[in-house]
Length: 476
Ligand code: BG6
Image (tube, rainbow, N blue to C red; front, side, top):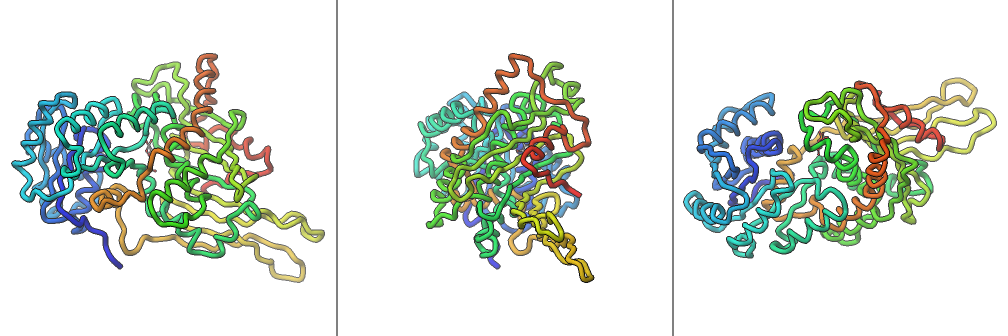
């Protein structure tokens, strides 16, 4: 088994290095890569932010973030990581600071032949200044070998996503852009496509002929964790459904591309997303009861912290198969899973309607796959009960956290696990009409349904499936 390593020297600069994305995800991932001996000997991590700070102060912040994120610390690896960490204080909108930064890089970069990576851990409002100024100091040329990593959300709706694309394209080539959705770095998520196409059993069964419905649930026990300003602006549909859950849906239903290129994968994903239809009548929006008491949340906020919806695929392979998606905050437990329910056999005279077969792929907290089959009870009569075959899937071989894994792909110049704008636009086309209706509802004071924390969300979400003769498969 070949272990992926950073295959060349690089400098990573992190814009917004004191922000929560860097602290919670990026720093622990960098430490993990050092601990796992996957970093080259010559790499530099440079925090770039407006706050004045010394290298030492930034290293302390980096160290503290890693200690908070990790249960067990390999002290030697952490010490080694910190030796590569630097800090530069500058404004995002001042060309002169970028010029100084360019000179500063020359003082710390030993070998000149290296990849440079600019990681955006800043709010989208700062993006354009950074693109423009990087361009002004010629960081957009081929020679500069710069790659840009930007995390979701990509815009707020279709129109703003188009503006974002335009702004990026004004200065950079698409080969330089890595649009990151961290779910695609999860081994269990990328395994969905492999499972479908490595197992002829699933390749043949996963079509409209056999599948009665698909369910995708991403339940979270955590609330908004102090991210009031961000979350109240976007809500769960933009935060989780437009990105992570539609990506899972795309992997579950897309046709395997003939070519194995990133472009072909993006195109197939976009094709399936473009075939989705959704109606505002089949959407349930909820809000946990104490949401408006959270710090900095307006006491009349109408933002949804829970959403459940029915989507229909018009793609010929799936026409008529409903897909139910739900996601919410402050729920009973953290549970992310995909359930494929198969069509039942026709009811038989002796034993009526039998329970259905199901394939359950649990993505979080513990990855596992279960097949629910029917087996006959002992005795002369034909009575059945459900037999669950299944086992946890432990990652073996090349295992890494999602940000570490995706980061190595950026260093290697592999874009397959990143998004492109074609699929991002297709996902916004699904969500936009729903949001527009919600926005209109806001004006008419149409409240989301309140639900108590620690539950599975509003019961209206159950009705959505009941009407079609199905029910949610819930965590046991
Ligand atoms: C992020 C969302 O993209 O994903 C968060 O902004 C959410 O609101 C998180 O909690 C969930 O990620 P994971 O990996 O914990 O399932």
